[in-house]
Length: 210
Image (cartoon, rainbow, N blue to C red):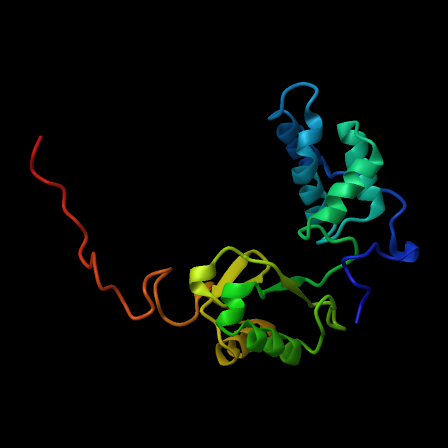
């Protein structure tokens, strides 16, 4: 188990300094240019996201301070943003981020079993990272795909219509280095009815009128 990612990392692993790479600095300038003069603080979230990606998934204090300097903001205001939103991680996370939705629609569809499967297969509790640094597991509030509940987000992709068995197969395949297909794991297409279409079963053709 590593340090929890929702509290600041220990001082011994905090880097002394941070600066954007040349490529990311050009991106930063493009992002800031989207906002009116004097309102560059509005770019704080995309800049924190960019810094987090550059750091491999987490935000050290030096990165937050650098963003504050770039945007001419008090450091405390940047800290407030970084600690409020769950998308920002204050300590190192695994190479893969596994987020299990347990809000009401997913819970009604069996997210307890899905979360339990993640804990069993990965061998960690929520908020922890596997010993090999590969996976961090977290419980989240509403991933916004309720019609396909239960849902798990792994890195940038959604895996839907899950049950413990299908999720275990998916995680085993991912751990073995195999390719996994995002989207519904039940065989249905996108958010169509689980039993197949009952209306609008044909693609409408345009009328011949002018």
